Each structure stands twice: as structure tokens, then as C-alpha cells.
Image (tube, rainbow, N blue to C red; front, top):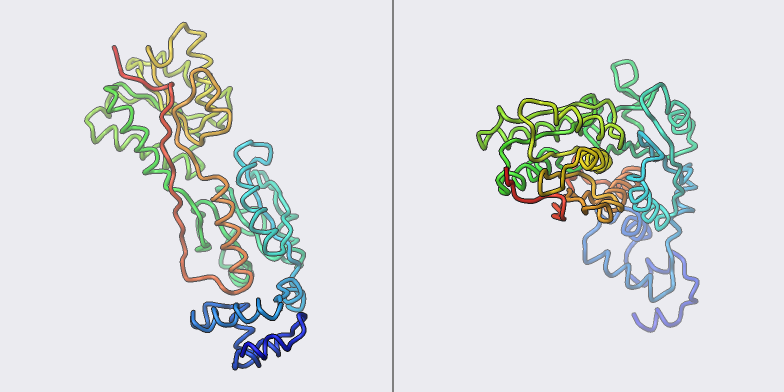
Length: 346
């Protein structure tokens, strides 16, 4: 077979790969386009021969022949939020490697996103990643549009009602329990939560995860919660002011994101309180600035770039019809202990 390989021109065709491999053209095509349909031994042989011959499978040309646009849409709830920069990078890394371009848009729940849905339905984009807690206008699944909905390539980044979409997510419930465990181990018994908007399932899961762990430890009656309409720095300032006026004034606070945690820290310092000597605080997200605030913020690290890469890889697999039957991928978070949390002295 080596003589066959050496005698061929470097610009080999799929027909030549099939001849040298001793298989049909359709087998070579399946091995390169849909490897899950071919045995591992055959795939390895075809990949080796393709490399030796200098044959390169043109994925983009194949997609073009199938009427694909090679564009994908990524919709988020707030395009300006710094959380999404690493997520976008992860999406872009996979998309670029696979020959796709990325269109970034916003669907904030106020009637937006319909134009991106139109792009998909008109064939100007092949699929969409939804990093929101709701469907954009025109995609909410219901009996009237189920067939249209089911034909679209979509991946969600949090559980969405209806639709049964493949989902790449983190376990917000278990991650929030880690924050409670940390503070309880430090001896805190009066705990507070600064909660994000409860209309978003993400924040409901964080609320329940933290509260359930506190209740299991026997301190549920001493827990104080404040629910905010958004997750801004200003909301953190407002929320912590309310918490510190409650009967059970907390010695430690869990904030549902780093921005609100930083707002709370600012307000606590204005009150003359020391962090963590007088009060501890834990955030969620591990934004790039969380390690440079004073004191550096204890928080839960989200796998932001890996989240984007995994979601994009799954979406492209669905577009090409090579996706597995997995309906949910759960990524791990990491609890990062810094200087904003410490032992309870009161």
C-alpha cells in the first residue's frame, strides 16, 4: 500500500483515498463527515491514508452543497455584561475551527430577538445558542409551531420551559450549597442572601441550594433573604443595606453574582464594617476583577470559556446531524477561597 500512496499526487481525491484504503467512497465520506457511523479502526485507517495522500476534506464546501450558511447565532440576555466575553471566546474558538462565523445578539425578554429568529427561519443562520432564561420572540414552543421549532438546531445554556432542548449548564443548586458549606464551616450561623431576579431559573436554583443547606444545618430560621430585580453593583448596595437592618443581622452573606457582592462590599465599608473581620461575603461567577477588589472576593468560578466551547461544539454537531442522544451536559464549577470570607467572631 505504501507504493500506492507514494505514486499518487499530493492533491488527492476522495476516490483515491477509497482506492488505497480498499473501501467504498461512501465509507470514506461517512468516516470524515459522520464518524459515529464507522468503526474506530476504519476511521483511523482513513484518517492516516488521507494525511499520507494530502487529502483534506472540505467541510465548508460540503456544508455549502447542503444549503448551509455556516453562520450561528449566540443570544444572551445582556450583551454588555462582562461575564459573556469569555463565553463568546469559547464559542468563537470552536466556530472558527469548524468554518463557522458567529453572530452575537441580545434577547432581553422585552420583545427582542425576533430578527434573529427570522434569520434562522430564512436560512441565513444554521443554528442558535440561547444563553438566556427564556426564548426570544418567535421561538417560544407551543402546539401551533412545534414542527417549525423541532426542525431548528438549538442549544440552551440553562433549562428552558418546553422544547426539550439539548442543554449545556452548570449545577447552580449544588454550587450554591458549596457557598453555604464554606460559611457554615467558618462558624457563621446568621446568614444572608442577596438574590438575583427570581423570574430567572438560575437564581431560583441558587436561592434554594444555599437555603436548603443552611436549613439542613439547623439555622434556617436565622437566614435573611433580599430579592433584587437585577444583578448590578447598585442592587448589591441596596440589598446589603436592607439585610443589615433585619432582626437577624447576618455575619456572612452569599451574593448570587460577583457584581452584587462588590456593591455590597462597598456599602459595608461605608457602614464602617471590616471584611471579613466583621462580616464575610461570597460571590458567584469569578469575574476577572473579583481577585483585585479589596479584599479579594471568595467566589464560585464558572467555566465560562469551556461553557462556550461545549455549547458551540454541541450546536455544530446538531447542525451536521452528528450529535449524540445526550440531552444535558453539566459542567463543573470551582469554589475559590480568597480573603473576603473568614471565621465568625461574633
